[in-house]
Length: 166
Image 1: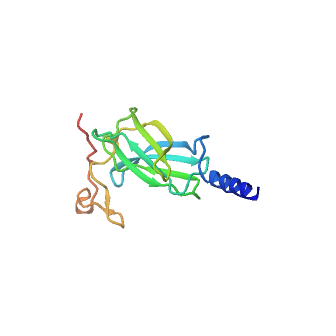
Image 2: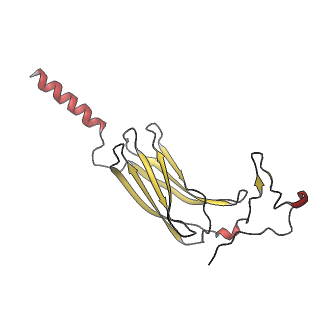
Image 3: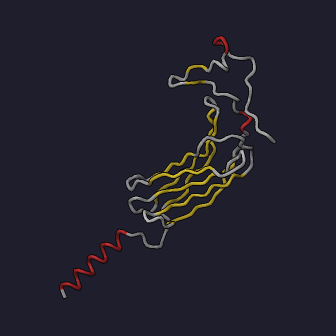
């Protein structure tokens, strides 16, 4: 009888370490495009809050529609058990269009590679990337003025803006 109780306790403890099918472990809390005019690039930024514990070794794989066309941009990040928030920032983007929905897929995978959750959403920008400068305004770790933009240290009378093929 003691062996049966011990086995039941071990089985219960092991089951407690595994995620049962139930509520989704992450909740989407924010999504937007971030335009960095100083460095002349844009990114998707997605925020999620942890609502359920995840097994140690879990990862998140995000796939972002490429506004310039071509293959989606992907990002893989480890999920840390003690962090309650997850922030995903895509690789640099070009050609973001105002009011056009862009697809984003987020997949949470356990340490064994099994999918624990899948989220699909869209992100819409309220500005067009044509507001961005064609070249970074600053360069280097000290954010020095870009000599290609500020010739002889002077600001140009007109900044060239980013353009994309139509």
